[in-house]
Image 1 (tube, each protein chain N blue to C red):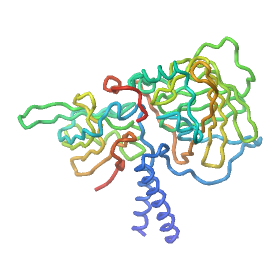
Image 2: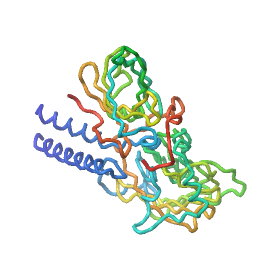
Image 3: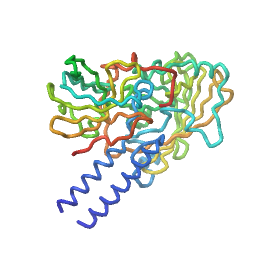
Image 4: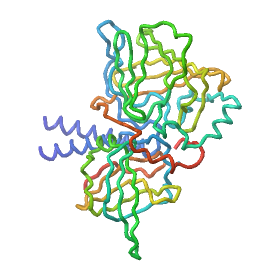
Length: 140
Length: 249
């Protein structure tokens, strides 16, 4: 019975994935899916705001220089509908982000996948039609 | 019970996988499957259109609503304007309303009363359309507005909404299809079954198009969803980073 409940839960999670997640602007006008980034750093700020939730991380390069990156997520409502809460990221937590860099070259990216300090991978839900398709949320 | 649970789970996984496959193919309408059932009616026999919906209008490109083989009859000056538009200037990217018939990619609710119908939008922006069932004529001295002045009546199972009095500021889609203050829209909203609401809309704007033309869009019921707060203006950092001409994606 437990397994069946687990299957049912998995099915519900999968159904949630099918929710469309087009943003309020054309994705590819702001982010370049051909410029994938993978960043590791400590969370300095988490903004649970519209039209996009955002978080900021301090990334230290090989020379020890610290730069603060601005990472865009989906809207809080899309995130909430896909299992996030405003408490999912902790200030100071070291995380890894995979996403697409802003076209204008600023230290900004669309965060597609976030790997939390506990190893859990969570998916932002923000994707343009031409962004790499990813499930919105997946438990490792 | 256990068998039923497994069967329904298998079905749900199958449906979900189909949806994912549709996403991977880059389909325009990426919505959860419509729930099945007959069209519901109000006690007075009118169609019950109430519920939380997704879709029902253009988001990325108006042309996806055209019948096969049809094209959008842009006037040369409208085409020129469209080609000059920059993605950063899309009012929706700037937290301004969608206008009509554009729909934002967020859930919205229809609220019906005997005298009014309201379209309540969750997102972008957190606003509403007010549609009068208790008026049969548009006022003559309308000032231009984002959603215009809407009067409506029922024709059988269809709600027919006639709207004029638009401003020329909103775009029809990400691509920047334009219009003028001469825009007149006639929307025919029909709930074909429990989960499906079809919007057949006629765009009549002699200021931007050579002739009236028709588009069809489908909204899907979101039976387990409720609207949530969405205040677009609170932290909109996108605009300075959006580059290039208006585009569908």
